[in-house]
Image (cartoon, rainbow, N blue to C red; front, top):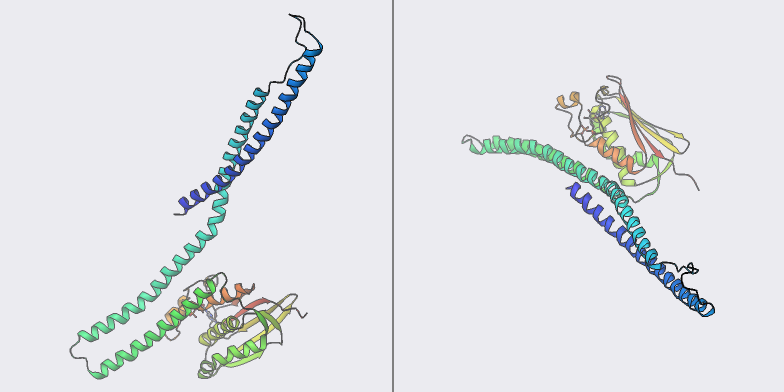
Length: 338
Ligand code: ADP
């Protein structure tokens, strides 16, 4: 599909360039023939005047050689033909490369979107199939009583809740994938953002009796409030989710010239070296995480976090060792006081 689009775009580029070149050729040819006509007129006048002054004896050498304007005209046409052919070949090649350069980012975006759709459908299909199967089995079973039905409904509800959080995650990711999505930027206080994010997950923190050690400084950054809170909620939620009960999560900040570093450090199980390069990929979950049925998730959080950081022209990194906890750090451009 992109090959034919590239050829079509090349043809359009070529058509435009050749039209311009052709127009220029007509202008050049017209002004050249205009000049030649003037020369012809002068030559004619001059030869008439000379003829009036002298009578050339027959057989004497040619003393007045008129310029052959017709020959010059033909040479101009030939030159213009050559130049236009060269432009045609050159712009054909250049147009083909230019069309490729124009279409490649669009192609990447379309590829990324179809990958996203197929990944999302795949993730949605598995829980939906098991939900459907459980309901069908229960419907076919003639011995199903009210208690069984209630158990099935509550189990199904739990699955539906999971599916809802998956679709919420997908929607959020799609939102951040838009080139100009969520761009309202304002001056923000980092401590306030951290407080709002912590507030969001208070029930989970309390449930696991986790201690939050907030050592963030009073820095200012420029960004989108809601997406930055979402980013902090993702990092804090993961830290709580993967940490053992009663452990401590520490938040600290550092200022380097031009940027602010915010880190979230936990005392959880850490991340294996082999998983580290992949955890920011969509739907990636470490094997150790998948095997733990009590740790829910779809592997979307960190890819959303990465998109948010990129939208803020920042970076996100992780330092982690198995059984030694993890530290996720985001670096964002500092807001300069003006
Ligand atoms: P989810 O947590 O929903 O699985 P994420 O994208 O947030 O998805 O994280 C991807 C994977 O990275 C997780 O499955 C887990 O294996 C690993 N991970 C993320 N944060 C932590 C953490 N704080 N401690 C240990 N592992 C983590």
